Amino acid sequence: MNTTDYIDYKAVKKLKIYEGKVLIRPLTKNDLTQTIKWLKDPEVNKFLANDFSDLTLEEELNWLKEMNSSLIDFIFAIDDRKLKKYIGNCGMHKVDWENKTCEFGIVIGDKNYWEKKFGSDTINAIIRFAFCKLNLLKIKLFVYEYNTRAINAYKKCGFIIKETLIKDHLYENFYWNTLVMEIKRE
Ligand SMILES: CC(C)(COP(=O)(O)OP(=O)(O)OC[C@H]1O[C@@H](n2cnc3c(N)ncnc32)[C@H](O)[C@@H]1OP(=O)(O)O)[C@@H](O)C(=O)NCCC(=O)NCCS
Image (cartoon, rainbow, N blue to C red; front, side, top):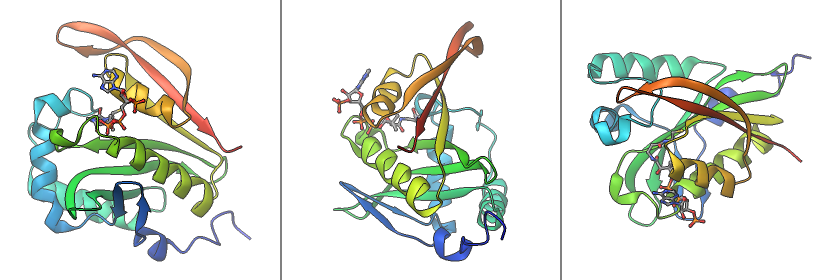
């Protein structure tokens, strides 16, 4: 049997996960106009790996299609559970089924929701999903050293700093370190 034979991809991608103040649900086409606005916001984008200033709805629709059919990417929308309000996206990428690892990404695009634990609740939900539903053993992520809020949220959820990539990220004419963080299933 293949390592992934037991995964029902369609079912897993349609999951709804409740954790604290958030509901993690499938990302839909209707979310994408809002997603693009967030990704283009310089105050949000400075923390992300890609420059999305030229991103179009057509590109984003293609990306969603690609993600939905991918066997190594699992993406979700984040809602404020109480108000049923869309506040951001999260996902696991580059799932390596052989080595049982993946890379985690998160963006709470609605800045009114920063520093109110919606991020930590989401991170905890994804850890549970990756370890219990996908049966992975390790989650890895990359974070810029100036993103102290994210680093604190990751540490709070159990991630540790594994490696520092020295001065590898250019932002505002200055090279910054990138931290590689990870969490292992106990
Ligand atoms: C990073 C992100 C997911 C964190 O989620 P959040 O809901 O804002 O954070 P939380 O409230 O869950 O936790 C933040 C922790 O950092 C601390 N913190 C808050 N603001 C901080 C700041 N400006 N600097 C340092 N630490 C800060 C808080 O004390 C909190 O810890 P505590 O609960 O023990 O008090 C969210 O802010 C976000 O999506 N930001 C924009 C995109 C981004 O940075 N993505 C990650 C890329 S690697």
